[in-house]
Image 1 (cartoon, protein in one colour):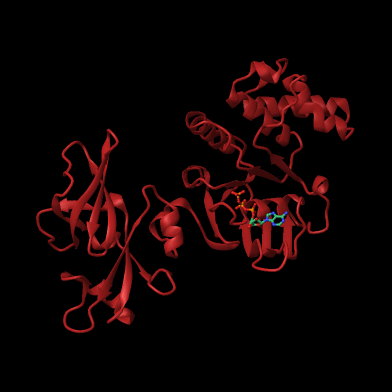
Image 2 (cartoon, rainbow, N blue to C red):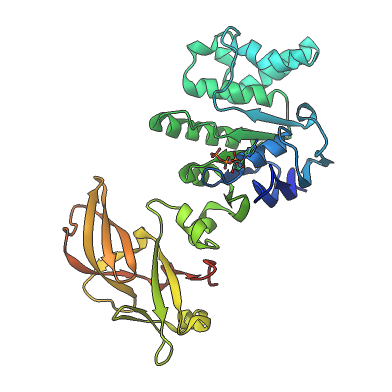
Length: 363
Ligand code: ATP
C-alpha cells in the first residue's frame, strides 16, 4: 500500500487550463519521489495540495490509509522542510528540535526521548547545546530535517530547499539530503526545477509540464526511454539532440537527411514502418555521438563544426547538420575546429524516435 496517493488530483485557480490537471501518483513507503518541471508547471501547487495549504478542486489525496482532502494541514501527518530551514536563531538545537512537540503539549520525558533519538539518527548529539549560527549549512539542514523528524510524520515534503544556495553549497547539500534519506528511509516528496537535482536524488522522478504529468520513472528509464520529446529534452545536459529526417517511402528502408541516406537495420525499419513517406524526429544524446571516418553499420550524419566549448575534461562541439543543429561531447584535447567537416555516428541502439505530430515516442 502506498504511503501517499494522488488520484486524479486537479487544481483550478480560475477559468483556463488548470494549474494541476488530473495528477495521479503513488509514493511507496520509504521512497524518495522528485517532482520536476519548468517554472509554472504546477509542482509547487501539487506539493501544497498534499500539505493541505491549497484546496483540491477535484480528485483524492490519501496519506497512509486516510483520505485527507478535508483534513487541516497540522493533522495530515506530514512535515514540510522549507527553503530557508526556518530555524529559531535564539534557541539551541535541542530547543529547536523540541519546539513543535512542546507546543503540542507532548510530555517532557517524551520530548527528550524523541529529540535525543532524532539527534542520534542525524549525528547531531554534539550540537544539541549550540545555536544555529554556530552550525555549518549542512548541520543546519540536518536540524531542519530533524525538526520535521521528531514529529514522526508519514511523509516529508520539500519545496526547492536548495534553490537559494550557491552552486557549490548546493552540490554539498544535495549529497547531505541523499545521505539523510538513505539513513532514515522516510517517505519524501521533493520539488525542484533542476533536472540534475532530480536525477541525483530521486528513486523515481515525476516530470510535469503545464500541470500534466508526462512520465514517472526511475532516473535511468527517464534518461533512456523518455515518453516524448519534452521529457527527452528536459533530462540530460546538454540536452538530447532532436533531428528531423524523412523515412523513405519505397526501396530499402532508410532515413533521409537532405541528400544523405542512412540505411536502417531491420528492427528499426519495422518500428518506423507506419512513418514511411513521412518525417520523424530522431533523438540522440550528445554522449552517444562520435566522429568517424566511415559510417559503417551505424546511424550517421554529415556535419560541419559551428562552435567548440572546451570544458577541460571534454569539449562540447556544436555542429550544423541537414537534420538541424547537433551537439556532441568530445573527450580529451583532440577536437575539431570551427568549419571542419566530419561524419558523426551513433549506434542504432542509442537512438530514440518520436512522432513529428504528437512528439510521442515511437516504441
Ligand atoms: P515555480 O518553479 O516557478 O515555483 P511551479 O511549477 O511550482 O513553478 P506553481 O507555483 O505550482 O508552479 O504554479 C502553477 C500555475 O498556477 C502557474 O501558472 C501559476 O501562475 C498558477 N498559480 C499558482 N498559484 C496561484 C494562485 N494562488 N492564484 C492563481 N494562480 C496561481
